[in-house]
Length: 262
Ligand SMILES: Cc1cc2nc3c(=O)[nH]c(=O)nc-3n(C[C@H](O)[C@H](O)[C@H](O)COP(=O)(O)OP(=O)(O)OC[C@H]3O[C@@H](n4cnc5c(N)ncnc54)[C@H](O)[C@@H]3O)c2cc1C
Image (cartoon, rainbow, N blue to C red; front, top):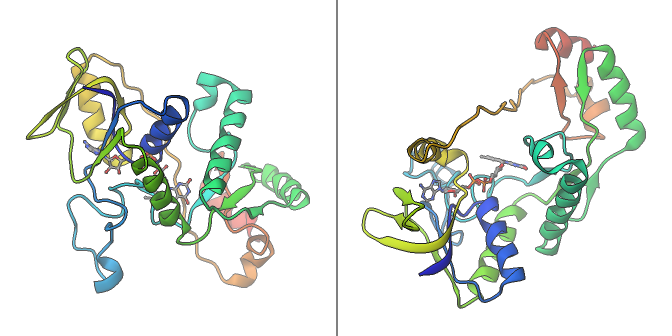
């Protein structure tokens, strides 16, 4: 019998395990991911130039989760990334953002922050006139290709505990919260506490589990990244200072974008 079973080894699952171990280093934890170990996880497209539709996808699944191979830009703002503020309040949320950021730095993230107060204020004014809300947020760039290294270090840290077990290439089919059981197609794992941290790639599965357990599901708003390609001379004045700007578009997105760059 395990104390905690964590389904999904993305940042949510990893941080859950690390935090539990800080408080209770002897806690018996088992973690599952349907994807590969971070040490062998690899997207074939890098070598052969096209996607071969791995099942599950090596980019979005495996230890480290969906962003393991991203360039690791952390938007350090409560205005991005969901509605946690509604549940824990602004003060606690800001405290957690700072804490998570520090944790990434301790695991080797670059300490450089992208933020220029004066520029941000000017942008905010310009945006306001164009029905955009500019998110004035410092951006931490953990470093290109550093994300996977940070995830590897977190993996090593977890593996340094004798009481932690990580099962890769292990897709969880079902859970029974009453019986405290987690099911793969071959085995049953008994866990006193079960954490579901399955991210975007596990969202349909999570929906099914919620329905089976009469849990209400609500639709979240989705942040959409819009790719607008323009000649450098138009965007340089902005992107020389900020490489990763975030706006909330209030209405008529195309008209606003064209006006902003004129
Ligand atoms: C290409 C890309 C680039 C990104 N860049 C950034 C960035 O620069 N900055 C940023 O802040 N965010 C970025 N993100 C978003 C970020 O990766 C996610 O917000 C984050 O990974 C969410 O963490 P999570 O742990 O909730 O879920 P995930 O990271 O999705 O982890 C969930 C894990 O659960 C596993 N899983 C799912 N279902 C099951 C099951 N039934 N059984 C077993 N395992 C299961 C999956 O294999 C996966 O590894 C990026 C995402 C992508 C795809």
